[in-house]
Amino acid sequence: MREGIIYKALSGFYYVDSRGESFQCRARGVFRKKGLTPLVGDQVLFQIENETDGYITELKPRSNELKRPPVANINQVLVVMSAKEPEFSKNLIDKFLVIVESFDIAPCLIVTKKDLLNDEQIAVIEKHLADYEAIGYRTYFVSNLEDQSALSKILVDGINVLSGQSGVGKSSLINAVKPNSNLETGVISSALNRGKHTTRHVELIQVDGKYLADTPGFSALDIAHIDKYVLKNCFPEFAAREEQCKYRECLHVNEPACAIKDAVQSGDIMQSRYDNYLQLMNEIETRKARY
Ligand code: GDP
Ligand code: ZN
Image (tube, rainbow, N blue to C red; front, side, top):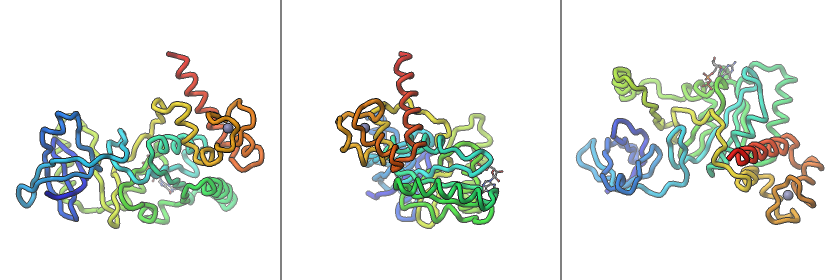
């Protein structure tokens, strides 16, 4: 029995990386009976049949999973925002950060297209990034044109996934670190082109021993799975202070003696973060009212 990680799933086959060796595996019926489908990112035990093939016998419990892209056990989501074109938006950054936090995954923040700004505009963005650093998020300010390998320094050990609205430079970041000649990928994409349906297919690529999903995730900002008590925990700077709120179940909206509102007043919590919190809270409340 060997241990490995599924880096690609295609047409009923699971491709498992086991200490640098690749095996094409099928899953045994036992998972189907349990209603479990192996996902890219799953840690598995598998039985070797020959030099290239095997079958998966066991899935290890997942620490988290995303639907888009369908990947499990993610160690970091890189929230990508452009400095310009499309316009820099703290509102969108906060929404993306909340969604990542809600899946129990650590986010970091990358701002791209630094080359499109003058010094004054750069200073403005840098100030915003310092505010996010103060919350505890790692931030990066890059130009994909000037630094082709920007991404390789940002990836953490394990599995990394990019997210962010369309046009911010996600594909540019991924393409810059993609191995340029991957025979296997070529064979598979021509096989896919012949088929009629365009199955969305995600693959983990290796960059300096770290994994990166080659397909970015959730550009749509769906918060349907988040309720208001989950929401407040998706703002780490709130969660860190809420023991000082008078009420244990404080939602930091209308309650008296709220440490979060005090911290916003004194400038210790960003006004924009609090405003975006209220806006998301409002979205959650209206959603509830509709049913
Ligand atoms: P995606 O939709 O997030 O995958 O974004 P793309 O990677 O397709 O990039 C959208 C456009 O922005 C493309 O025309 C890229 O060439 C351009 N782009 C990406 N990163 C940068 C950057 O750092 N600076 C500049 N000037 N353009 C960039
Ligand atoms: Zn409070």
